[in-house]
Each structure stands twice: as structure tokens, then as C-alpha cells.
Length: 173
Image: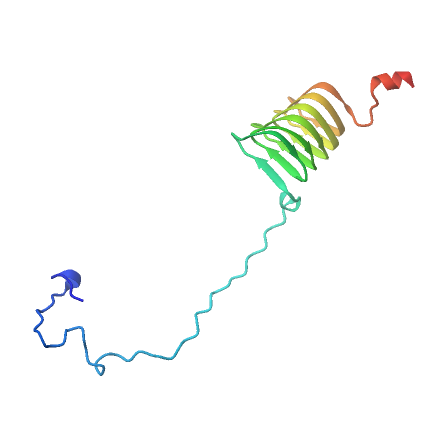
């Protein structure tokens, strides 16, 4: 192959017809190439370090509704933890619910543990522990096993423990 003058710092001499090209060298002058097949290079395998077991990783399935996301008109089942950073309008039966400060949930929820930093509107049944942080607001019908409300947290509506009986049946019996 001929290169233009000055390419790669070399100038090709004009070729005279009948003479071998400068690239063609006798076999004796060329270094011998090995024709013995070599085994393919083995990839270097490094062990992957074990991740630290964190509670959120061992908790099972997790659904995160990120900021600026709106999830509407669904039933959420078989989700161990729902994290709401956006807006959700749904019915949910699950293990844990976490509503971030920027998040809001509207609907019916039957859950084991709930941690509210944002807004909840609807019917909330928490069989275990309900935590309402200082920025949390809950409006609607709320039933809980244990309750912790930080200063500034708000609960409005029909609020009671799961052990409570409705007032009408308590008076009748």
C-alpha cells in the first residue's frame, strides 16, 4: 500500500515496473511468525464483595414512586414496602408504607407499619406501628395498633385504635 508523501514520516520511491515493491521482503529477512496455536487468554475473575445486609434490602419487594410521578387508580398487592415520593391514588394491602415529605397518598390502605412524613388522605389501617413525623398530615379514617406522633404532625378525622369498638355497638351492648 502506498501512502501520500509525508504520511507517517516516509516517502515512497517511485516504483519501476518489473521490480518487487518495497513492502515485499524475502522470507529470510522477515521475522518468523509462530504458527503454534496459543490457548485463549483467561479472563481475570475477581470475587465480588458481599454487600452489607441492610434492613431495606432484606425486606423483600420494594416499590418506589419517585418525585414528579403520579400513580393513579391501581391496587397494590404483594409489595413489602411502598415508598411514596410522588403522588399515589390507590388501594393497598401490604407490609410497610413510607410517605416522604414530598409524597402524598390518597386511598385505602391496610398495612403492618406506616411512616408518614408527607400527606395521607383516605382510610388507613395500621396493624402495627403508625409513625407520623413533624411534617406528616393524615386526614380520614385511621385505625392503628400503636401510634407515635411527633410535635407538628397532624391527625384529622375518625382516629382510633384497632381494639376500639364503634360507639354505637358499645352503647347498645
